[in-house]
Image 1 (cartoon, rainbow, N blue to C red):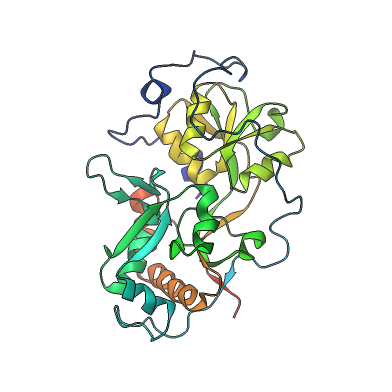
Image 2: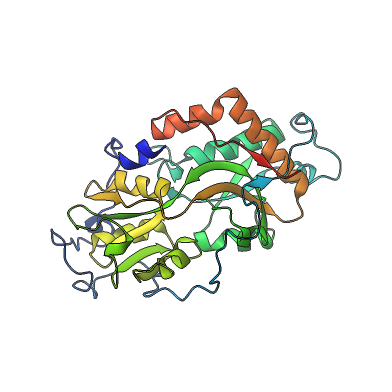
Length: 329
């Protein structure tokens, strides 16, 4: 998988780079590296917190559980539309559609096709496969665009049935929601402007690094020995605007998402080693154990019949093996 995220030279035909001139009325950044303080007064997206509020938890969120271990499927998947009486899946079928919280700005993962206007991407493929297993119809689904910070609250309020939004499984989140088995492996790295001279977190002491609010990237930055200044944004694509405006010196997120930004702006590059190990899982409400087992059975089938690999190759251009599932019962 590292080949893909080190080599982001494949460009998307017809994709308009997310340049500031297009998004913010032509306020183009001057070429060449310079301090992020120079353009401090430039227009910026809404919802930026500079600096980000201090992270509440000082402890390592990965300590205290086997964060990759989910519930084992029980038996074969039931026929579509014929879910066990009284189950979470029967309730979803009765409601007439599966409601999934997603990102609509993550190129290759979950985004709107500029020609058709439809949501497409690797995570959209997974969501449609779950809908097909429930209803026999991959289109029996309602996608709800949410921010990174919304992922847990919308589940706890019962507004969505699941969240498929590159959500890292960690022990802190396991106490709030339940997860499927791992469907994507990644790790936190940096995206910088070409020619910046930045090679890793050690070069960012006292300099601004953008990450999405509600992500594990923010506390990881705030705990870094080099003491970078974390800046939070509601959307990762807004971090790209700040980087292009020279209002931050780097973006930090999982490398799988950073690669999608690098494709959109050829003047950026991913640098540094992975500073975290971030398995992504499908998040579901706590207590919906039957739904977790059902979704895990769908993921098992995707691994076995090759549709996980086919979708990954379609969107990312390489043939990878799906993460091996880990079960706790």
